[in-house]
Image (cartoon, rainbow, N blue to C red; front, top):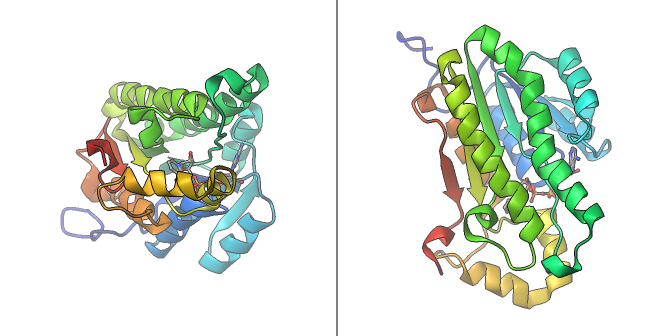
Length: 252
Ligand SMILES: NC(=O)c1ccc[n+]([C@@H]2O[C@H](COP(=O)([O-])OP(=O)(O)OC[C@H]3O[C@@H](n4cnc5c(N)ncnc54)[C@H](O)[C@@H]3O)[C@@H](O)[C@H]2O)c1
């Protein structure tokens, strides 16, 4: 801590963080980054095999959780909280043109990608408000800002996350709570690998060429943005969406 009471840049010592979908991919990199920065991390993930393995390796805790089930989320946060930092990272996608999607697909995609964010946020907020501090970081997608051919429902849910985050920022500024989004572009994770397995090399080339940097991003490059937004030094940033997408927003 400095004389002003701030931790050193990049440190999260003493902070308690709840990272959803932290068993693999971007969430795992965030959990690892936060734990290395001194935070006490709880990984909440559907995957009850990979979560505990990672948790043990990085000195975190892991719980099995479906973020779209609000009652279970409330109980888990009651049991393992309170938290200073929430990272709403758990997400699922689906590659299909909108006309080929069903109501069941809509419910699933919106249930995890949007309702899951609402459920986890509502569960952690009362304690953050009481403490007068909180950092909420929501992982959305450039698909929300640019649209996505073959990902209409996913983009709708992720766009909802951006709108929700701005409202959260407005409602919670007076409690010392910031709320921001990170919008990744194509990041090398199991989710992306699965998309490429379906869409083939053409999809991979199209995703790469949509970035100015002409490459995929790495999970650690998203984690470093999350670490910054969680830090003491990011206290004057709220309601924003930070693209981590190789300049995708400017067009390829
Ligand atoms: N990889 C990309 O290119 C990319 C791009 C833009 C946005 N994103 C977003 O980043 C986030 C992480 O993506 P990723 O690529 O690491 O995905 P991933 O599929 O590799 O990992 C997602 C993790 O979330 C967990 N999860 C899924 N549904 C869950 C649920 N209902 N409850 C709890 N956990 C659940 C999975 O078990 C998995 O461990 C997602 O929100 C995704 O939409 C990813």
